[in-house]
Image (cartoon, rainbow, N blue to C red):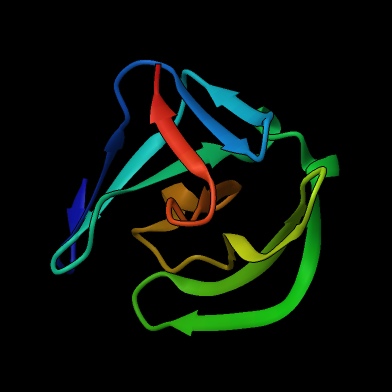
Length: 114
């Protein structure tokens, strides 16, 4: 699916997200979002993430194309990673496919295909 310069497709294979020494998510049902001018982003179904690892952040961002992004922090064994993940609520059609999914900043945690 492609809309407004944004392409969303199934991410091939199995994907993990690791914060510190812990794998906090693993999915065979991830989505890959490609947006012109940005690196691709992997979105994990919320059910494939250990949501107990996420704490709501006060950070909220409104994207005119994707909707409202609520951010999350992750506590590792050694530190709190601020605003490391985000999820869109009220995603704007036709990009609503990412609603109910969580994405992570790859410069703050490891997001990898295994």
